[in-house]
Image 1 (cartoon, rainbow, N blue to C red):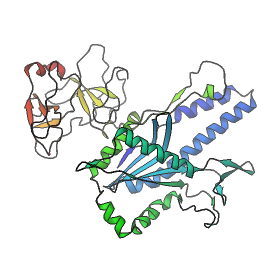
Image 2 (cartoon, one colour; image 1 turned 90 degrees about the horizontal axis):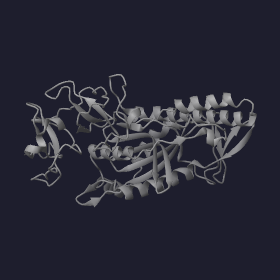
Image 3 (cartoon, helix red, strand yellow; image 1 turned 60 degrees about the vertical axis):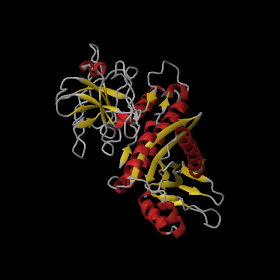
Image 4 (tube, helix red, strand yellow; image 1 turned 135 degrees about the vertical axis):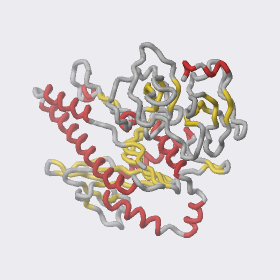
Length: 403
């Protein structure tokens, strides 16, 4: 399953192109802008090429989750992950993609250099880069308690790293005895290497990994929580290149939730982000929508902007000034097993005087649901269908204006 695709960069490309035209009188700045633009396009091409080979193997695999272009900030540190692959053995692969028009070489001491303008130029080591990303990811897991638990024990992830390069790119490697470059892999050969490494795993390691096998839902939930931490990069190109004037071209990469939302309806304006709540499932910004069918047709509700990847919903109070977005198709998913209700995450303001009740069976905070027949509201256990406990709303909670 692919939980997030790469953020769009067209606005950044347009900005750099516009600024390059404005600075033709300053040859040095114009050249720097063009190099930045070429680097941006080259990086996107490399990530797109690697994503193509990864997507084809992961998208239909039941126990693999893939995240593209994830940027996480933690305690002043920033980690930009080109690709994250999560499998059922709680292995998280940090995959850094690299692409240079004329390729690159690795010295006997592990130094990386790329070829440009008839000579080699030094570059930051991607191997050290992924090591730093791994350290930050470990801190993020600890700070946000992301690791799944089983019988009260935390299943700590095994973080692995690899450098993926464009299959058509030339890579000059040193003698393996001087410096091991096994983690630098052509993108089209990664999964062959991945399967080989799994086959070489020792018997003891296999037995140990079986204890850490997690279900598909747990992998997806972990991936969704990581995606919720995504913070798009903001670039002020005028300030970066010392170009005077008001920076109208400050570029913000689209929010992952917005870039991955897949609705059949044409995009329409939504309520200002400052007024929109966050999704109770993945913490992404929600969008105000209007129900088209059923007993609640015509009423407003908050839906996760990452639909259909995330189906979080919340009730909304109708306001005269609200601008409503089109409802995503089948916004109210039907449970696979027979059930009198559809799941709707508890709205922050759905109850006017009473707090949500705890489930009488498993003790979890119950969520607001709407009956398929009749449209009445009630409290239901969030563990449905494993737990089918229900509780009626207090009279003051059943105000139809809160639906």
